Length: 358
Image (cartoon, rainbow, N blue to C red):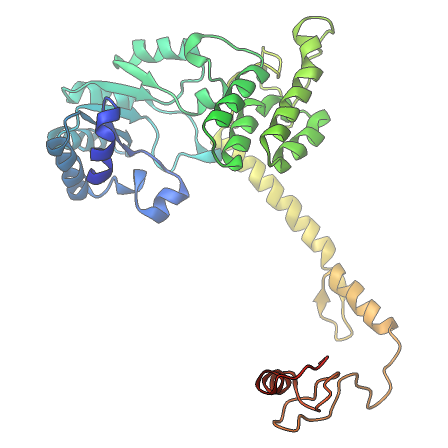
C-alpha cells in the first residue's frame, strides 16, 4: 500500500484509506469494512503511511452497532496519524436491500470525541439533505456515493434530463476508455426510473446487451427522442407507477433524481411473500409420480413419457465398430486404411510419412 501511495502522492492532495466498503469482494479480499476489527493492523497501516508520505492520510469508516466502540475506533485512527475522518453512519451489514437509513448520531459522537475534521456520509440524496446533515451533525462536510450516481448534479442542486449526463459521461469514456460493464452500470443508474417503466423493458434488455460505445449512444438517443417532447411540454406526462412503485416521486422519471429503496422491513416482507409463492409453485410441480410411486417434477415426467414413446431397439444393436486395433486394444478407426485406432494411425502416418483419411 505504501508503494502505491508513494507513486500517487505527487498527483493528489491526500491519500484516503477506504475502510468502509461492505461488499462481498472486500470480504474475499480482506479489505474495506472487513478490517475494522483488526486495530493493530490498521494502526500499522495508517501510521506507516502518515510517517512516510508528504501529504495527509485520511480514512473512511463504517460504524459498529456499539457507539462507544465506534468512538474508540475513530480515536485509534486519529492516534495512528489520520488527519481527516469520514464517518458513514451505517454498519457493514447495512447494504443492498438491507441498507436502511444511516444514523447521524454516530457522526456527532465521533465529531465530539476527536480533534481532526469529520465528514458525514449517508442519507445524502439531494442538496437539501446536505444542509440538513451539516446542521444536525456539525460535520465540516458531507460525502455522497449512491446519490451522486443517480444524479451527478446533486451538489449543484439541479435535476437535469438523464440523457445529458449520460452523453457527457460517454464522451469521457471515449477519451478515457474503460470496460463496457462499467459504462453499463453507470447508465443503468442514470436511467433507473425510466427503465423501471414496463413500457421500456425492451430498452432495458438492449442496454444490458450493448457492447460498444455506438450502441450505448444509440440507446441514450432513443430515450431522449421518447421523452424530450414530454420534457419540453409538447406532450402532457401522466404520472405512472414503476416496477418498484411510485414512491410519491414529484419529478418525472426522465429527470435525474434519488433512488428510493424499500425499507429493510418491507424488503424482508417482500422476500417472505416471494418464498411462499415459490413454495406453492413447487407443491404444484411435485404432483407427478414415476412408475415406482416416487414424486417427480413435471419436467422429469415429460422426459419419461418421451422415452416410453420411443420404438424399442433391436437386440444386439450397436452403431459402434467392435473391431480392435492391430497394435493395441482400442477400437478400430472407422475410416483407417491400416486397421488401426486413431492414436496408432496418427503415429504410423507420422513415422512413415503416410496419409490416411482416418
